[in-house]
Image (cartoon, rainbow, N blue to C red):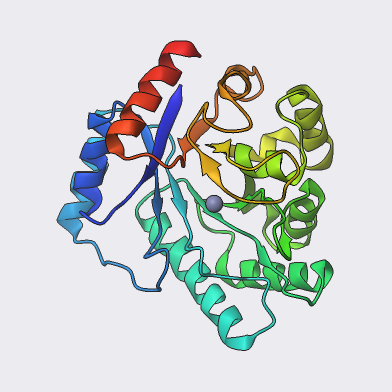
Length: 274
Ligand SMILES: [Zn+2]
């Protein structure tokens, strides 16, 4: 089982990787840069080597970087859009250099211009960032559909991927909280949801699971993560996701509102029960 949590990298790559080991996890998700600003740290060669050593020695599974929440690649406001393009282009290259396997981003909000125009912007933004020569895969995240958010339907993600210049470098990250709030009933009909995913996108594109419970009810289009078993999805349904034969080989990343101790306990509990 590949399981980890979203980790702060405020103390650097080595300390963060050491913390993963301490939590008895074997993967992690990190922000590709400051999630609410735009700056990023330049890592020394020594730090990167230390990070790769820990990762190798402890047999980490595939790692995931998350692009900042502040970027909106669907926007038609020039400054917002240019910022999103720059972040994605730089972070694809930066995360590739760290040999991180996947970089996930929220497709974006169209803010009134409509889904189709929003998707055109996203595709153009992807095409200036992904050269096709990378090893890294850029993942589109399933979203709740709050406001004018794109990505609450599998069809949106399919439209983006199909129109991109390098679809072979684009995969999907499924967030259990987001799909539930978007109206995909993973509690009562996980098989049906996976079948639909397979028909629309193809399950081979699914590269990562954000494993979160939801504070908000089914179909609410609201994005509030809860700790596993403390939300509307519930422990049994999340265990069923982890145990599912079509999903169990995937990396699971917790983005639950807990501290390191809480996450360590959550991981221990899940490993025991799955
Ligand atoms: Zn996300």
